[in-house]
Image (cartoon, rainbow, N blue to C red; front, side, top):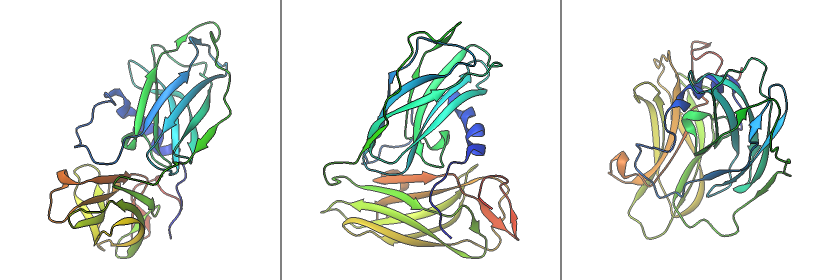
Length: 279
């Protein structure tokens, strides 16, 4: 049974440990899909313990999809998560306000950052990120007035190739076929293309199961059935990836991709990745 994306805060805390790396650097080859944008419009000069304050942000994505903007405070020495907020958005672009309270036991030095990701997803699947500075003081200095959250959809038709995982299960069942909904757009006058959905093991990218179909020109919704092997015993997280690429070409020559991490595998009526999926 498919379900729409809902926030998995249990995964969020663990995934924030990756934030110590430089989020602006990507080792993945570029695709043809435009990149989202996220920037801070206003943040206080300093913040105080147990005192609410606001951070205003602006975002833009190439198309509308359920997304969430995360604003997080880490300890700069340990990368331990200390405070944060999540604002859900649905439009392709807009402005939002995040309300933060730094707890009494927060430890300096502070590291602030914000990122945007698909709803349900966290740092490993961030689409865009930015950082800012707000030191600890006796009171909130140069506070920001909250904005009225706004969202808008693109005003022109999509004129680029893309693929996204539109809907997916909270858990794949070993030994059963599970549907996944993929949405894609294929621009005209291109060589033969295929759209695929693949479930992989997170640690080593081993393929658990994959399905593909020939892509058609234009924008389409596609239901693909993932026939998970009965012996697919998983003791670690998995992720789902959708790819649009020319027939017979390597993964590095893909023209679009999308990934989701908020899923898992069930085997023998037992959840093998505890706490990561709905019961």
